[in-house]
Length: 223
Length: 184
Image (cartoon, rainbow over all chains, first blue to last red; front, side, top):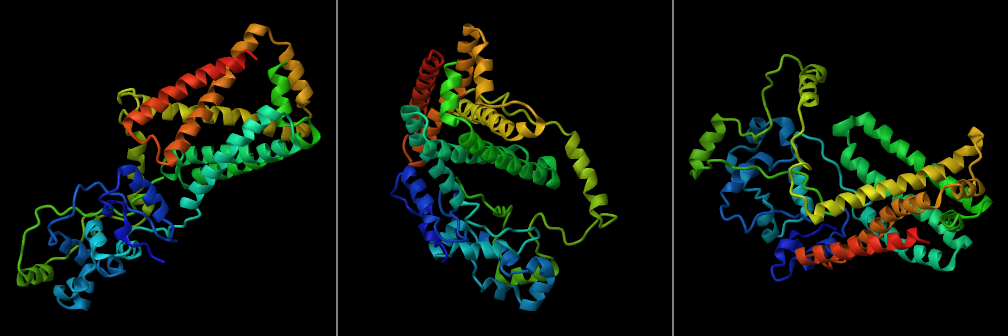
């Protein structure tokens, strides 16, 4: 199901910025859809401005064939314009163009595009926040009640995963392929995954064959 | 949080209104190409090692523009920086302990709860309180600022005033609770 850009945050003129943000978060529910945030203050007045963009990108694969041949195949330039693909995001939102169609038009360029996957997108975000929220009652129960196999077991799973996601964000920001190379980034990411697995194993072993995480903190803190 | 922009829009510089005839004539005599894509290659080789390698070497030698050193210190980005730094520090400590416990039997090192607690008992009291504060403060700061982040994720306190007020609350509460924890 494609996301209509008419539901994009900038179309909701009467809502406050915070509501727009929340609406944008909620509206990015369809697979392969995304919400566009852009900085222009108002709609683009000059529709002639889009001609250049339209002629350049209006045919999928045009970059491969070369524009001369694509124009030759289509005949006159006028017939390309007749395809009428609105590629400006502001005009696209008023024309009801879906984000999928805009993305498809932009895909006809000379760089590699990736298919957006919500597992790495908003689902990852949702999972991260849910995990973080769950840590609050978990730590509170652990502090108030003391050692218990269930809270210790959950801590031994939730805390390493939370740490892993934090480290992963830092690797994405500071140790990305542009910085350390494609294989450097791959090596670091897989090393992090291995270390997280080791941490999970260590927590499990400590919780089962030793006193447990909560009791360790309690005893070492008051030692 | 924000979906990245995959493609940037083209900038039309000096676009002139033209009739349909003129546009056709223009297109037939010129290759219409967006800025940034070359139709004809002018390099002497098509191998990436020859064409791209000098650019990469240039990038390695280029200095980085000042960023953190020149931006005005503000509560916003300082707290964000410390949120990440303290989170990384606490996580590193946690990982070191957990991985050490998992790996210790293979190395033959005695690393269990009893060994840790007996080692800590030998440390003098003053050093213990100082160490506890140094360990507790990153934890309390990261936890309370994390709650502040979660509040932002529900679209609350998303104004400059809200950000600063919650920021000062987090700073105060984290210091007080860290001191309290250190004195236990």
